[in-house]
Each structure stands twice: as structure tokens, then as C-alpha cells.
Image 1: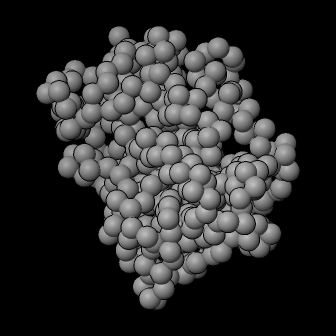
Image 2: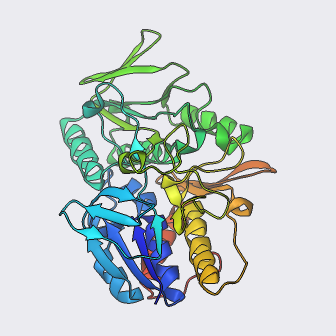
Length: 389
């Protein structure tokens, strides 16, 4: 039987393992943690509306449901020509016909990052955000700063949506607690127009939301350093902060930088539109590990990662049958999300035809809650998958 090794237990890796097994291939998934983390719904952890356990699905349950093998052990080295992988325990994995690289990405580092917490970093950081925010609420007042950074070498590696979501959820949380007037909230980003990928109309709506919620904004100046009590900027300004949440832009995974695979300037694996690493037989890269082709507004998102995963499962199966048929992810490139605000949401969509942002008061929040339930239970095979999802 054809043997496939999947490196990574995130959206891309789990989806690849599930769909490879649908084609009855022998699949082994390697992950550095024992659970699949639903990052889009972790935005509710800082306000206490969810816990880490609520947004984590045990990988052994997924493995049992779909019949793939599971190894929880971080990868320390990848030798793609030899199709050889070394794990932290010292174990070596060899003899696979295909390797699917879905190890995610590293984060760009800034001076003083130890003074920040991220909603897109280690899952434990989301819980620490809750603890720190809870302490400030009990204290009765505070200054809170929420922002994200960019990667000048790759515009697709920016994650701005979750920063907006946590910011507006915290605003709603403080308002419900009756202490919003005791807290100063500030949004910050180094680019002139953060969120521009969503389109110009969305930017106008975002500014309106900042004004309506009395949230300050600091944009257009490079971050020079994070300090214990705030953020320093290149223009000499300082934002004072008792709690700073910052989502650093992505950069290539350290292990992949040392693998000998072809990499983009930002360190992501260069593939063709079928996610094949050319000149490396049987090696594919998907999700955040892959350099994303397409227009300037393109973004690394979970649904694109899953499209890549399903395509790779199809392409590997067809290759095994000696059928010349491949699926490309290019026609599925778009920005799609429901941006939650705690008391509602906004539907955000961007394609080659332009972008839109549609307010969804109240119902939007429950739509996203429903998606979280669907994601968990459909992955576990407890409910049917919707077409294209």
C-alpha cells in the first residue's frame, strides 16, 4: 500500500490525513502537540467565553475516527531527497512514498516580544490573556493595546483578522461588565492601511467601528520595541499598555530553512499550483508552510490550507493510478471569514472582483459559534461534511 507521511497537525495537515485516508492510503501524521487547535474560535478564550479544551480536538480521536496513524513528537530535521524525517526523540522515519509538509510557520521576532501575548501563538497564550485581562478587570481599570505586524517580504503572511476580533470582543466584554469607561483600548499596526486586503469599503467600515466603540488607533509607524508598560514606535511615540496583544507576521519554519527545499525570500516552500515541490519527487507543501501564489491581497487562511490539502490527497491518488489529472488551488484563492465582535459579526469576502464587508448584528456571532461546533464534529466524522468544506 502507498505510504504517506504528513508533517503537521493543524488545518492543512489534519485535512490532508483525512482525505488521504478516504483514498485508502497508508497515512501517518506527525505533530508537535497532541491536539488539533481550532484557532478561529480561540478568540473567545481571552474573554472567558471559551476554554482551551473547548477549541482543542484530541488528535488520537481524529486518528481513530479516520484510521490514520499518529506520532506526537516534534520534527527536528527533514531530508526531502531521501524522504527521511528525524524526530525530537531521536526516532527516524523513512520508507514513505510521499511526504506532505504542513508544519505551519514561525513568527517574526521584534525586540521585547516577551512583553506581549498572541492569540495566534501557542495556545497557552490565549489562556494567559484571559488571566491577565481578568486581573485588570478585578483591579478596576487599565490600558489595553491590540495589534499585528507585517512581513515586507511576503504580504500573505499577515494575520490581522484575529486582532480585530479579540479587540472588539474585549470591548464588548468590558461593556457587559459595566467597566468599559475605565479602560483605554488602542489598536496599532505599522502599515498605513491595516486591513486593506479586505477592500476599501471594509476600511471605511472599520474606521466607523473604531469611532463608535471609542477605540484609539495608531498606524503607519514602525514598531521599534515592546516594553513592559507599552509599545515604542519609530516616530518617537509610545503607547502605554498594561496588557499588549500582538500578532507577529509569519516567516518560514526553521526546520524547513535547513531542509534544502526551495524557499521564497520569506522562507516559505516554493511549490507549483498543485502544491508539488518541483525537482523533489513525492514532496508536497501546503498551508502556512507553502509560499502562496496569487495577487498582492492573497492571505494564508484555513480554508485555503484545506483546499490545498484536499487537492494534494486527490493528486497523490491520481498519480498512484497513473492518471494525468491534478487539482490547483489557484481558482479557490479568496479571503473569506466571519469577523466576530462579541455582540455580532461582519461577513468579509475578497476575490479578484473586489471586496465587501457586510454587518451581521447578533446573528453573525452565533453563525461563527455554529461554525466552531461544525468544525469539531465534522472533523470527528460525527456529522456530514458540507460540500467544499
